[in-house]
Image (tube, rainbow, N blue to C red; front, side, top):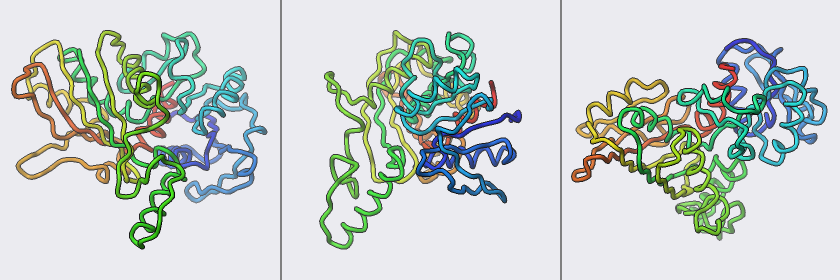
Amino acid sequence: MKLKRIVVVGATGMVGREMLSILLSRGVPPGNIVPAASAKSAGQGLAYGDATLIVSSLDDVRFGEFDVALFSAGKDVSAHYAPIAANDGCTVIDNSSYFRGRDDIALIVPEVNLSDVTRYRNKKIIANPNCSTIQVVMVLKPLHDAFKLKELAMSTYQATSGAGRKAVDELLEQTRSVLDGESVFPQRFRKRIAFNVIPQIDDFSELGYTKEELKMMNEFKKILGVDDVDITATCVRVPVVTGHSVSVFAKFAENIDLDRAIAALHKFSGVRVVDNNSTGEYATPLDAVGEDAVLVSRIRAHPTLKKAISFWCVSDNLRKGAALNAVQIASKI
């Protein structure tokens, strides 16, 4: 990527560390990067190849000295500091949900709608979509271009790392407790997550949908520009550390030609088809860990609904679902 001065806000978190890893793999020298976090993390050293980056307190960061700020520290931090950074001339790419619904701010998946960056009034803040939204829209973009999407139903199976390091720790601790015959007391989740699935991510709205489900439904329409598409989602937390999975049923305006659909997916940058029923070849969350691509499997046309298709897709939620997508945006602007 073009060398820029970059500050990574929330650098000590799971996504922040993944951002540093991706920047390192893309050859960004340590002198071009400053990791930032809360005051309690200031002075901490973070490995960056053979170098060690020293974490700065966010309150001490002079955003005007940077070209790009990659934010992954939660919506409260973004709400306060992102406008400060933007006003100082630094382009913000924000991984929180705070700016995604704003009418003046672009919501970007580079392979899908990079040109939207120029269409929105606020050019200094760019929002990173929800992790599950990203992987589904990556698969549906080439199908939408070919057949024109009309209806969409999604069920997610989301890893605990999507809720942060403490959520992962809770999964691991609960798993040990259950195997040892000890009592389990949920803290980060409403129900026990070990050996269980929880059909709730975020709080419930008055509509009965959770906020996570509404995020996916609304973000999808904004990214693809499809206000006329009927969308529903059910978001579920599963006892997986890394790797989100989504089961998708979609209906289109035109009849589905399965060979044409699969060919379109093969050609689309950032999507990898892993689908061979005769050999049992399909993607699981473990297969996606460390992968940049979204993996799509179980691609099948409906036996009676000629305009419908179903598929299963998995993605590393810390990479393409968060850190990688943000770094890709930074490399394009």
